[in-house]
Image (cartoon, rainbow, N blue to C red):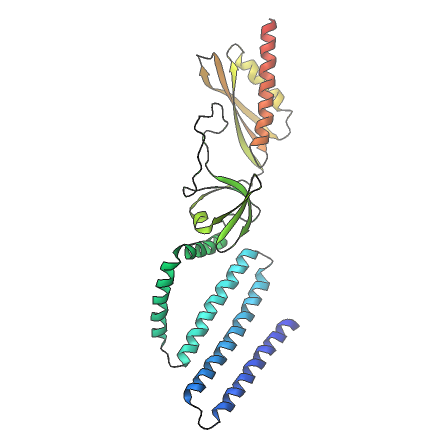
Amino acid sequence: MNSKVNNRVYFIIFILVIFSVIAYAITLIPGIPNTINGIIDIFIILIGGVLIINFVSDIIEAKANNKNKQVSNTIVFVTRLAGYIIVIAIALSSFKIGITSVILGGGFVGVVVGLAAQASLSNFFSGIVLLFSKPFNIGDNITLSTWQYGLIAPSYPPKFFSNDFLVPGYTGVVEKMTLTFTTIRLDNNTPIKIPNSIVLQASIFINNEEYRNVKVRYEVPSSIDPSIFIKNVQNELKKLNFIKGQPEIFISETSFANKSNIFSVKSLCKSNSDDLPRSEIIKVLIKTSDSLVKLKRRK
C-alpha cells in the first residue's frame, strides 16, 4: 500500500480508538442510562462503518477507473449502497432491534417506495444491466429503434431507395451513460437523453464496422444493352478507392410500362455510413447511363 492508503487506514483506526475511549469513559460515569450507551454504540458503528465503506469504495474506484469510468461508478455506487444497508442493520441490531423487524419494515417501505417510483427504479436497474452487459460503448455510433419512440416513415414508397426496408430509429454517437439516462448526439448534432429502461428494450444497431455493404438501385432505359452497361459501370467503380473487391451488378426489376431496367449495385465500401458511398456510386451510374444514351442517339 502507498502512503496515501496507509494514512487513510491510520486515520480510520485513530477515529475508532478515540470514539471507543470516549464511549468507555461515558460508561464509567454513574447514573448513565443504558439507552445512552446503546446510542453511543450505534454512533460508533455508523461512523466506523461509513469510514470503512468509503475507504473500500475509493480503492475500488481507483483500481477500476482506468478501465471503464461508467462501470467503476456503478461498482462504487452498489458497494456503498450495500455497505450502508449492512452497517445500518448492524447498528440497529446492537440497539436490541431485531433483524427480522428491520427486514420486514424495510420490505414494507421498499414496496411503497417502489410503487411510487416505479419508472425511476426501472431506469436505475436497467442502467446497471447496461453498464455491466455493455451492448455498446461511449463513442459508438448506434441506431436505436424502439416502439416506445416510434418514428413516422415516409408515406410514399421510395421507388429506388437503396435499402430494402426503412429502420425507424435514432442514429448518433453515444456521449454519456449514467444509471438513469443514455445520451446520444444525433447526426443533426442534437443531443437526446433516453431513459435506460427504453434503451434496454430497444433494438440496437452498431454502426462501427470499417466496411459496410451499400446497395444502390438505378433505372436505365431498356434500349441500353445491359451487358455493356454492367461492364462500363464495373470499369468506373474500380476507380473508387473506398470499394473493396468486385461489386455485384445485376437487373433486379424490369418495367415494361416505362421501358426500363432497374439495376442493383451491391458493394463493400469502407465507410461508417451509407450516404457518401451511395452518392458516389449513383454519380457513376448517372454518368454511365447518360453516356450510353447519347451514344445510342448518335447511332
